[in-house]
Structures are given as structure tokens and as C-alpha cells.
Length: 412
Image (cartoon, rainbow, N blue to C red; front, side, top):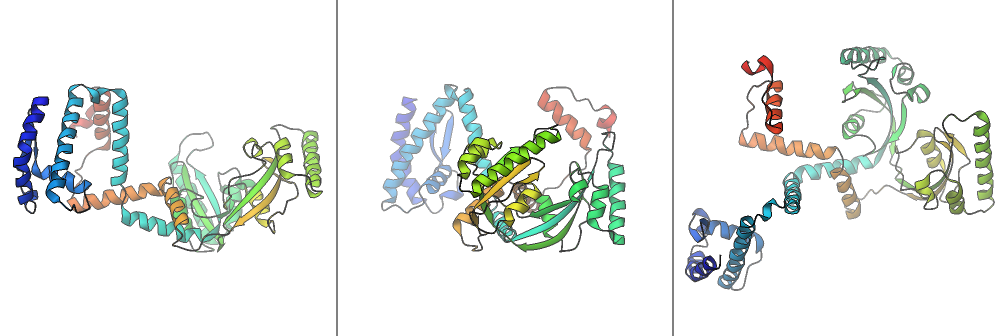
């Protein structure tokens, strides 16, 4: 390795002049710049790396290239030495390389055009809350068996009822497979951007007020949505709560005892007792109780409908609700601060928050699908006819080191 380095250094001065002279045309050729052992590096590759890492123009171009060439040579030698010593087989190194590769791939799978569109879309949707109702038809029948044909037939019958003018909420209460529809008639309350999966959000935000959607097929069943109304987005609320949970199977005496405790805590709060101390001492929401009852900022569509209705009905900061009951138990909530929705499209903090949510949301996959479609169209990729079963069997055999077992499908 040392001998190789000496040979390279002796060659540097001869090649450096050639590199500078050929600066304008070198990218069109593959002139060998130096060799080390059985490996070689051409001038084109070196200049590509140099230009990438030295975007600013140097005062002395020849000196800058010469100094970078020394670094480049040392780097290539160290990498080769690492391979020869087997460093690339070490578990820790392999993990780091895999992580780096994943980060690089993620960067290449980011399309600025699509990301900008998703950002604008999320911002526009964040300005509006939509009141929506939902009918769900499960693919599982009453016996717990998957029956997509029966589910599709049921959805068609429901759509016929709606077309005749039957009330959506009544139909939801009678026919929806969502257990909560028996009491809430499918009314989901208000939702906003990021409340629901992206595919549901797209349907709802593209459905006019007073209209219902066609059935949408998900992995678990069919869905029909109706937009009951819309309003200017309410923003977020910072709140505190005390939850007195009702244990499953509690009798009426136990429920009454919990309700009495809720009333007594409310009276103490109204009389001036400290809400945070009472939340820490009594609340069964152990996460918020640990911080004096403080909850993360709340947007619409995140919690139980009764809970949100009570919270958003509080008239001002500092207002405290009377005890109210939900499926979780008795709640007392206090409005700390209303945070209005941000309407400035140039607000950097809001744009960053939206982008973070987009990256963690299902809509990010649509961005990658967009890139895939764009690339395949650009390079003219064509899909040859094949049977899915054959392809999956072949891929499984390769991954699991097993012989292909696909019956007669292979001959088709």
C-alpha cells in the first residue's frame, strides 16, 4: 500500500497539469488518472467528486485541485484497505451502511414538485373543518368469515336506499358494521387534515356539502361518507382534564359513586381549588395526570365526539366544564388556550410542521408512487404479461432458498 501511494504521488504532478488543461472537455473522456494495484480511477470520476464537494470557485484552481487530489487518493486507499481487512463484513459497519443507504434512497425518493403540491394541499385543508358521517361495511360476515361478495352486495343496497332519499344517519344506524353507529348514527363529528387516513381524507374533502360518496374499498371493508357541513377551521386547544374511569363491569352503585366524586371535584375547582393538583391526585388518565392534567394540543377529530363537543363549547380560556360522561368515564376539562388556525401560507414554522406530518403520513407513499410513475414513463418501462402467482412463487424461492413450487402454473 505504501509503495502504491509513492507511485501515485510521483504521478500527481504529471496528471495535475493534464487535468487543468482539459478542464472544459475532460468530462467527455475516460482518461485514467491513477492506478493502485489492480484498480484505477479516471479523471472524469475525480472531477465529478471534486465539483460536487467544491461548489465555490477557488482563487487558485490548480492548488485547490492538487490539495483535493491528495485527499481523494488517501480516501480511496483507506477504503480499499478496509475491504482488504474485511471491515465491510463487520455487523456494526453493515448496519451503518444500510442506514446510510436508506437515508440516501429516501432523499432520491423525494420529488420537490410533489412535496410542494402535498404541502399546499395540506395547508388549504387545514383551513377548513368538515362535519362527516360514515357507513362501514365489513368484509367479515356474521360468522367472522371473509365474504367480499356479500359486502359488495350490501354496499350496493345501501347506495340504492340513499339514492331513493333515505336519511343517511338512519341508514348508518341500521346497516353500518361500525358498532358505535348504533348510538351515534355514523356521525363522526368534525375532522380536519391528518385526522383520518389520506385516502379517506381525499374522498371527504372532494365531496360537496350535503352529498355522499360512492363506496370506497379499503383492506377491511367498504366505506361510504357523507359531508354534513363545514366551517372555518377552529385551530387547536390546549387543555387539562381529570378523568374518573369507570371499570368494566361496574354496577350502578359504583357508577353513582364515581359520578358523586366527579361532582365533588368540580365544586372544589369552582371554589378555587388547584386543578393541576386534583388531576395529579385523582385522574385515571395517568399520562396527563403526571403533568397536572395537561394534554397535548387537541385538533378536531382526535377524541370521542362527546369529549370534543364539550371541549369546543367552552367559551373562553380558563373555563371549566361540568362533569360529563363518555364511554371512558367521567371527565372534567379546562380550556387553557385556544390556538387559532394559521392562515399565513408563508409561516415557516407551520410549513415545517405540515411537512413533518406529511412525511409520517400515508400521503408520503403517493409522493413515491408519483416518482415511480414519472420515472417509468420517462424511460419507457413496459410491463411484460406474467402471472402474479408465478412471480411471487419465484421470488419466494429465491429469498428463502427453496425450490420453486407452483404446480402447473410454470408451464403457462
